[in-house]
Amino acid sequence: MRIYFDHAATTPVDPQVEASMRPYFAGRFGNASAQYEEGQLAHKAVEEARIKVADLTGARPEEIVFTGSGTESNNMAIKGTAWALRDKGNHIITSSIEHPAVLESCRWLERAGYEVTYLPVDEYGLINPALVEESIRKETILISIMQANNEVGTIEPIAEIAEVARRHQIKLHCDAVQTVGNIAINVVELGVDMLSMSAHKLYGPKGVGALYIKEGTSLASLLHGGHQESGRRAGTENTVGMVGFGKAAELARERLIQGPARLEKMRDTMIDGIMKRIKWVRLNGHPKRRLPGNVNISIEFVEGEGMLMHLDMMGISCSTGSACQAADLKASHVLLAMGLSHEMSHGSLRFSLGHLTTEAEIARVVEVLPGIVEKLRAMSPLTVKERVNA
Ligand SMILES: *Cc1c(COP(=O)(O)O)cnc(C)c1O
Image 1 (spheres, protein in one colour):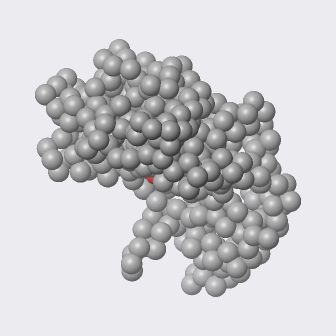
Image 2 (cartoon, protein in one colour; image 1 turned 180 degrees about the vertical axis):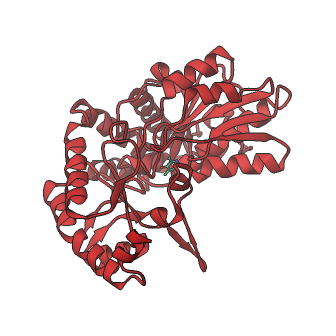
């Protein structure tokens, strides 16, 4: 049995979610926009799913638009606002640690003449609401800040940032792909105008996301064609995916009643175990304000990719902040923004736990990781001692 520690990348589809989707592949295949019986069955299923996603987030069903991914939700919020408010201004505020779906949408807008402020973060990856306020100009039309960072798990002060946005009457978008389903959230309490989510991060299927759009928010569509999703997103409804998302949302809501205590305890056991047994390790992200299932560490004098390979051979899946892109070893933009050196960024590992993670799996990683690190450090061109003294 493999041990899966990459739930921040994607989660397995819950068997109950899979079962809920199955009838809509062939038996109930109707086009949700059609007037006859097959269509009405599909339409009803889509609207029930919308209610479940709304219930999970404290939104009203009319405020939920289904999309094709978390990536699309982020693109829609950012580009859609930029287009809708283009006569009002051309400045956007975001952070330097956002998901590429936010950063690249902003960079694309920069090429089209928009101006973007990428806010710095502190050593824990936290964004300072006061800095958000200082960055506001009279041309500012949008603030886009994630609720929790996908790499280091730091949970941002969204409610405080929403205060600032409200005071200046600027729209606030929040990428909540890592939080929806993992911690209890409520769009009204958070005070956001738009919020992105993705089904496959909460035991739902891949290829379906949603964007919460607060009533009265002006937003241009990215996809034009039919009148689906109240005219906000054209294209025949992905009934199967939406039904699966709805079921996943319903199950997440039940799970959240238990609270995150179990996951948090396993997370902290893992962090403590690794820190105790390996020298020159640093915890990345905030020690307290972090996702219940996130463990992100930097291990000095080793490459993340090397550790990843060895762990994989031992049946353990996790991820690293260093990605070998072509010939270039690219360090995580998140860790660099937090002030880590390139070397420390390359030695990072992320273990993201899920609700099926067991204590035995945690114990296994804590048991095998020190040996892997020792082996890789012994192979490194400079010995640890020489490097420490250098
Ligand atoms: C996974 C993720 C996304 C992208 O969602 P997809 O559905 O995979 O496109 C966006 N933002 C964050 C924070 C994520 O973790």
